[in-house]
Image (cartoon, rainbow, N blue to C red; front, side):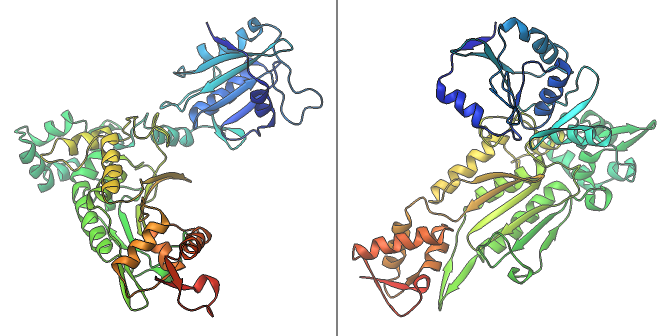
Amino acid sequence: MFEERIPDGRELQKILDADEDHFLDTKGCKIQPAKLQETFVAFANADGGEIYVGVEDKKFQGDRLQPFSAKEEANALLATLLEQTVPSVENVMVEFLSLPQGGQILHISIPKSPKVHYTASGDCYVRLNAGKVKIKGERVTSLAYSKGSAPYERVAIESVALDEIIGSPILDDYKQRVGSNLEPKRFLKKQRLISERNGAEYPNVGCVLLFDEEPQAAIETRCAVKVYRLRTTESEYKREHLAEMPATINGPIETLIINTIEKIKELVDGASFYEGDKLVTLQYPAEAIKEVLVNAVIHRDYSLNDDIHVRIFDNRVEISSPGKLPGYVTINNIYEERFSRNPNIVRMLHNLPNPLNHDIGEGLDTVRNELKKAGLVPPVFEERANAFVVTMKHQRIASIEDVIMDYLEQNPDSVISNKLARKLSGEDDINKVKKALQKLRSERRIALVDERAKPFDYRYRKV
């Protein structure tokens, strides 16, 4: 049985007012089951979405509400979507919205799926903006890698001879630390780190990333980490903002993580700027940065031809990892859901004594808790183009006013400007900081130093 309910007028108007986009589509009740299935599959293969059947699109002339006169009229549509999609999409929500004037709108809510789905005719679609795109061949394979349903870490690397890995001192060291006495080749086979291609055995991507001395030279896609120190707070930075040339970190995964953490620590420890002749230093919890970096390395999409980018700005640290969130994971449920795109890599690192990695959710909980302990706001998660970006802002949980007064109380001989207040608080909005300064001035807690300056160049001292 499907749920049935009566929507109020506001909900109906919201449906009619909404524009079709990446997450929403409306269809007339006369749509053919095969055509609706294309849209259904496209949503499941992308980020999920909502379909309202019985609502014509905005180009329709006349009353756009064209409901089913009886729920049974939707049976053929539902049978095609729920029974003939390959494989079936899990956790689909179906309900009928009963209209006051009679008739029903079919509402279908499709979740983001960890699998690649096909229509009954064998076609694959993805949602793109307000439409669907048919994909095939390499694009379907790339979609499977992105979702994690076909782990790229198990692709054979023909350019690396298996004997190179078997004789690797990195593998020997790993086996000693986990206490394995197995012969190297048997050990790799048991750990699913050997794959076949054309009847021959090769180390796979996961194996090369873990145990090759120079995996960046062996794997066709880029898999290094680039670390930048940028002397700016702007999102659009230029070459002249670089404090030094970006550092490129190479090596097998464990070494890559450790060396990157050291480089970040070096640059973050130097994350300071001058306000006049006074040096202002920013501090971030090391454990939070480590957890974000580890997640970026072990959960990234290695099929994408890009490195991980760590950007250290004057007021934040951004870590960008190639690939969107895998499986069921979304920005909204990231603290609760668990899904690993590279399960072999995650497992192998987790088997080590004092492993670098926690479970996905545990690591992010640590990030949030460590930032909170340091008095900083929680991390910000974004999906930009084909990358997942975590931003740790040097933004105080305290109000802008509290940050300003705290600075002036700790530095009684100093003055503060709008620019310095933005850097100290992490608040980018120049007008919000201006209002905070004006409020403190009206309360006679701060005073203007030089009224002849331009408004945004005003400097203030503690009264």
